[in-house]
Amino acid sequence: MAEAAEKKTAEATWKPTPEAKQRATRLRIIAWILWIVAIVGEAVGIFWLLRQRQVAQSAAGTVVVTRDDATGLLTQQSVTYEFPQWAFIALIVLLVVIAALSITGSVLWKRANRLDPASKQDKVRFFVQNQLGAIVAIVAFLPLIIMVFLNKDMSGGQKTLAGVVGIVLAGAAVALGIDFNPPSVEQYTAEQSTVVQLLGQDHVYWVAGGSVYHVCSEVSDIQNATTAPGEGTTAQAVEAGKSRLTLELQSELKKCGLPVPENIDAIVDAIRQIQGGATDTVLPAPVYAADVTPPFTPAVLGS
Image (cartoon, rainbow, N blue to C red; front, side, top):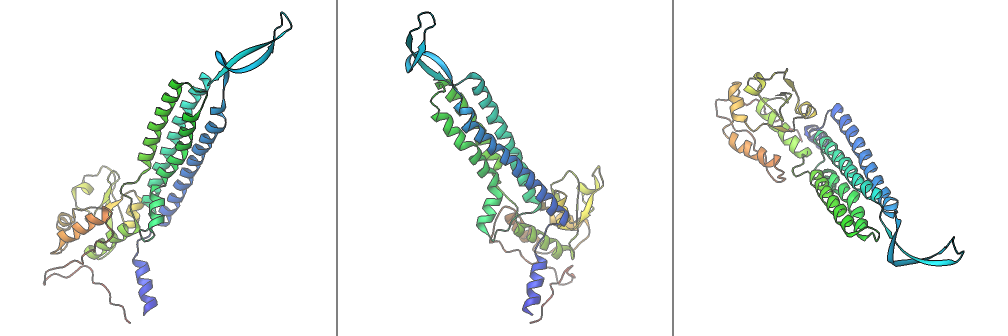
């Protein structure tokens, strides 16, 4: 029935474990706190620090009237203003602090996205969620840098140094905030489907120091691990920090004596494309020799 088919489809879609979901939420909250502090720091720089000035004697400038204590007469004095050195040093420190807060927030945000990724079906949300670190870095730096160059009290040398430092730090924060190959629900679902079709169940293995999870517990990475290997579902592997399925499927299946599909190269190639961000790649169904019993046979839903 249609409702049953929809339920089966929903169940087949990858979902993070409750623990991974909670950790992702916690990381995102911390990231937002760091970003908000960075933006508050920017506001302090614009509305307080850059407004600091001190009087500097000059041949030209604003004319002020003062009283000469020796004669009791009013005299005119020409003065100009300059940006205090202490404020300039504080500005450089502030730029470094904003960069540190922005970059740390971006690192935590990207880590959360690997635990609980967005779906590519909503293109706008997918883009914003994965590139939010870069967007925040621009917001935290661009207005402050512009106000540095518009400041009338800073000397040319001060503007140049503060501007260069600001631009370099902003560039680093934006670059580190960009996720060039963000994960997606679709990627994790394709990898989960591959595991189930090749093994007959959603059960994989991983080691503490690795970035991938495996379909066989007999491979050298698992056997040579200095700590006890982990095992569980693909969602639990992602929770453990393993962001993708290994591409060494053929050798791993052989190592564990599991049937190898005749089209394993096509399956691996499809997974590689999906992990690279492809959205229109079709995941091939495993094709086995006539005398091989498939580990998994898709169920046929009734109408």
